[in-house]
Picture 1 (tube, rainbow, N blue to C red):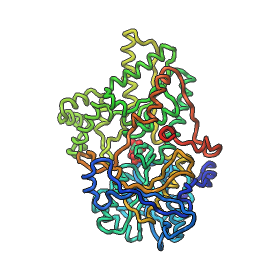
Picture 2 (cartoon, rainbow, N blue to C red):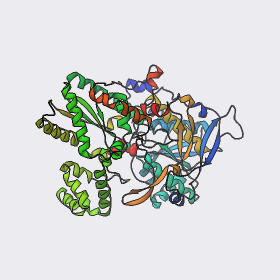
Picture 3 (spheres, rainbow, N blue to C red):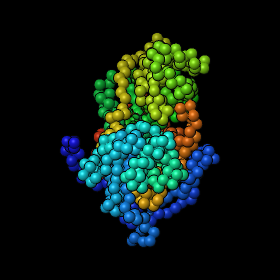
Length: 553
Ligand code: FBP
């Protein structure tokens, strides 16, 4: 059933994403040099004998079609999967894919597998026709075909998938996902190539977390829109805070391990405190160090009569505190080795953990508030990650800051009132209608994927670069996924995975923040970014993230 559209959605449907000049007309393929993985080269090469070392690919615009032009011989059918957490712009990747395919040959077909990789294995799919695509252009969400977190890693899954791919005469599969899903795409590409299955696999870089990036993948889609949504709401909270002058707001932000989202929101809104997990780890800070820092900022502001403020907390913080990191690593292995743990009751689970952990980690576990300790033992996601969005770090920190301030009051070091409110922003931003940046970027990623398929590429990620420039100047091509891989411990085993990009403490975005943060802590320098604008002047509507701006300008 078609959903009722808001007036904004009706008008926004007519938006035509701006395609880079490099791929809007006739294009030819330019092959770069052979590539290597970012680390563990020998191991990765052994695991991917058919797709390791591939060259980087770039598309160059041609003045007129030539013998080298990328084209489609006959017809080609393509399958698409949305994998993992939602990110604004997924529908535009699919519409770019659809338009790219139809441009190559109007008889080409696009099939969507339903509810993530599971749809491929279980043969649940739909043909995506013009009517369906037109209904979803420039909208947020993944509801066109749904998403899921099934991990594609077993041979019988690959084989079951191949049955339906052959039945539908599908030449290539496009997997739109984060680092874990693109790792799966690389494994699948290798398997199909090794078995001469005749199916190419192409990945697209999705995740609001912003941690799927490197020199050649400048950002993942969805980060821009999600951080603009969070920054709007943080700005609103700051204005409320600056009006009432009586609350400290502890705001946890989604983003898994990396602090890109928190840092970007800090650059946009200038809060009093923003914790960057990567810095916590680099400085080997303890939980008490973090708490004491915040308490000192609260006390200093109180001394100036400012009993209010905002604290941004990345959701993955807990994993970066060295003692917690060691505890989580041991817990991961322990829980992976004891499937029976899940069937124990809460008390028995706590006793089991305390009995089986090393002395040091058991002491850390015991020192945590019971609720937080329990949250650390909850089920891992299918990729072996702790579900950090379930850990209430914002409450843990504000509770500990409150206690520290009470102590400081007794010592005569703090005079003021501390009243804390808590927020968690994550799901609010994941399905927002894409900003112009994400609408254009996603459309280009999908359109570009069809060119990679027509060029015969497999095991590549669709790559659009030069993103801080106007979209007409963006560059397009493909990056071998194995190039981004290293070996990491997951579920107690060593596995090849795409290396997560954490915040670079030597990078310009962090430095820009570090230069200003003392001022922002002391004074009230809030910025109120307001809502994403879809209509209006380009400097408002086409603005990129601060992260991209600092990285590239
Ligand atoms: P992806 O890595 O799949 O893009 O997921 C992003 C994310 O939104 C994380 O920021 C968050 O920790 C997680 O998904 C939440 O997962 P779920 O949607 O399963 O609750």
